[in-house]
Length: 493
Ligand SMILES: *Cc1c(COP(=O)(O)O)cnc(C)c1O
Image (cartoon, rainbow, N blue to C red; front, side, top):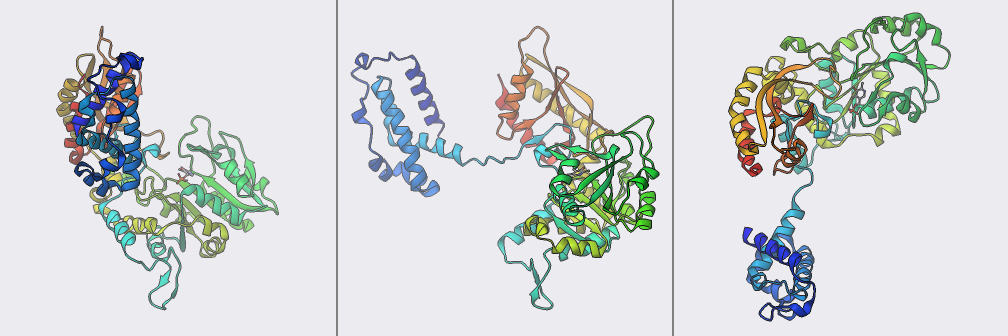
């Protein structure tokens, strides 16, 4: 099939250099009349495999386009006779259709150094979740069916038990993502009423999630409390009134306020809320189900301790530190969760059986926390030993150097990875990788190399900064290394 590509290229080159006037045509070159017809080609042997694979509609359309280009070349006297055999035409059509059939959503190598990269799909799911999704996709499931009573059941009752077990909450429900969870909570519990939030916590998360905007869309009125760097308990107390629906705390996921600062603890806020019968809600953002310091990772508040501190509702993401599918989880007081469940907004934000199947499988892994570091890919990546990545960098450096040529200089270098998705914005994890710079006196362009890496069959996504292309190896696990190596040859200048 590469033969055809070569012929097409020949055709193009000739076309570009040929004299435009048809009268200059060399009489031995074929004319338009010699181009075979669509009908004849569709019956030719060379086309049967294509028809079986892509169907008549697509083959006819691609074939017509290709024959048009041949006709055009013939008129310009730039058609090679070799382009007219059935096999060569079929191969050209095959190349076009194979390109069109290539999925647009494709696996890439995430060498950005950001483990939970929102633009690259965040958490990678464990095999258990993949199998659960495949089962739910290919067989009917008791999604909203209570097997005991034989009646209609609740969509998320399967994961509710697990979520309560793992967080200590009374009740739980699931929607499409954490932004949806916050929208639902505000829309149902604070519509046309006031929500008190510290000025230090009015976050914007990438992808246009801004707390004040979500608040407005939910029909809730934001009451800003305190100052950006300091908020005190009396600030909240003074802002409470008859229209107060919620006291809300937002985890400042992607920034930290340092210096002369003061914030009110959740316990203090809960005490105030109880005294005035106003529920306290916490948007935890990433929200971990386990204490990460157990693995010497930086501390992130857990959902369990937030519930234990008295929060009435807690929302968090399924695909950040939890390491599951995209989802927004709400846990907390049973009466509040029941209210959320009944609302039409919840129906509009409900998750699919695929999400629930994957989520249940991932949550089940948390029942064995001591095995989590092996089983949960997100945690496994966060815990990779720098020495492993250093050895990997030493192995890959000569291969990459050979592939990019002497216009570039490849070095193995220590670097710092991030958890990503707003978790622990300040903390960085020591990592190792390859640093590529343009060689002195040579004309290597890092932008061009970056683009070439992105054009590989499985695109390689690095990070371009400080006149260096950084390839952090934290997310290149041993099982993927061979696939990474193999395609490097395609970079050779
Ligand atoms: C990430 C984040 C969100 C949005 O969660 P998604 O699951 O991406 O919708 C909301 N609030 C906080 C604090 C976050 O960190």
